[in-house]
Length: 311
Image (cartoon, rainbow, N blue to C red; front, top):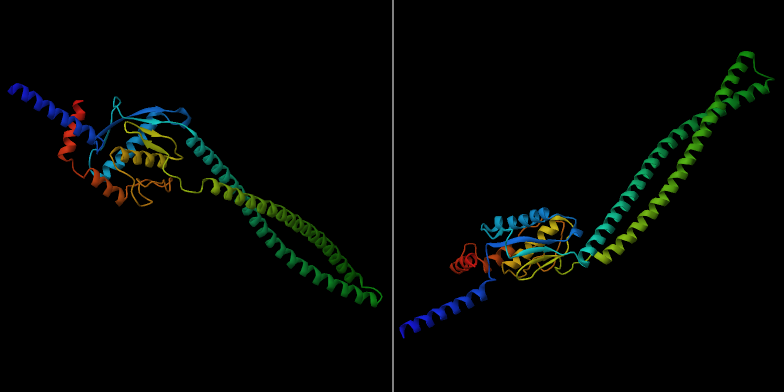
């Protein structure tokens, strides 16, 4: 009879223990062993590179907390899959359009810079032209006055005539040079006007494209770059390394049992803000972690860890 009671008691304890473990297993299962699962080649990264990003996300959590929270294990039952779908297609399209905008902006800036250089050249040449023209006109007036004076006297002496003729030739050459400079100024002005119009058209088109881009992509979307599936993490999209690391950190947080928190700069915020910024855990992130896990391993966490290691 005692043996039967003992067996019943043991079965009850096992049943209660199993229920307790199953109902609390998702609460801070640290250290969480993970592996890299499927990596769709459409992402353009290797499995080795995917692991580097996962390790970086792991390190950022562990350095901030001071605990061993995650561990990479090729045979772990918790995979991180990189699944390419319409979200990454949209991200790729956005990146392509952004690159086109950047190229368009660079082209318009180059044209504007060229216009500014030509305007400076035109201004400098125009100042030189005006000075030479003023000197030419003064000399021409003096020459004409001298010629008229001697004509009124019936002609100039031979030596004076020779000097006047030399001045006439110089004035003629100066007039030719001035005409060439005037033509050069006209060409510069025409080129400036042409490039200026092109620059204005480029800027106007760029502004139109930026407006369309912002309408399509310039708003915050709910965090759909990845999700925690309970027994795995799925990564769906990222546009740069910092965004991918932040997505991995976010889903790692969910895997520890942490829910969304306040603070737009938080890793666990429900929207992905500033994906190009290097991710860093916020005070809200740390407070949420402490609430779920604590900064030191508790007895219940230790028991669950031992059970996981035995299973």
